[in-house]
Image (cartoon, rainbow, N blue to C red; front, top):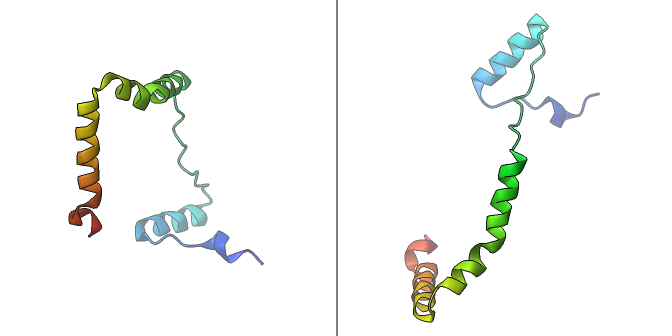
Length: 83
């Protein structure tokens, strides 16, 4: 007996209809392929991400960092974010 979770129906009526037609006509439905990422772009993004916060903090003056921290704290503790 097949596992119930493997036979789960899609909630979208159009997707369900497409599966029924594919099964009745004998066509195989292929899941959409996941797009592969460009390895060079991934490496470049990672390189920048590793530098990010530390490089920005080194570039800011203490007054600028203080203002950014005040703004972040105000946003974090504002009543609008608790809704």
